[in-house]
Length: 77
Image 1 (spheres, helix red, strand yellow):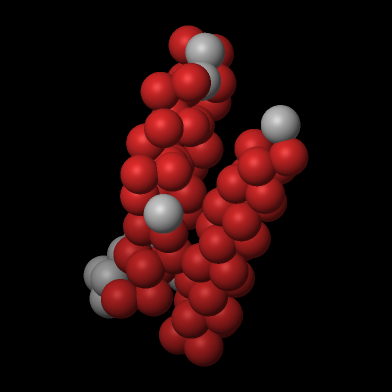
Image 2 (cartoon, helix red, strand yellow):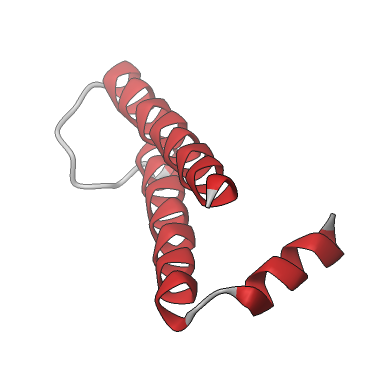
């Protein structure tokens, strides 16, 4: 599986590699933001704790959906 990913990465053009990097970067940004909202107690957000947890989980789920959609779209090409 890893060899297959490396081979397909080497075959990509510069534009496709850049888009892959941006896709992974935004996945990590949304994932980090979701975990920060959940676990950082002194975060300057005026929300009740249960809403902060719900918003953090929503961001984490969105990051995984975005990640899956991105990689499913690149497999078709």
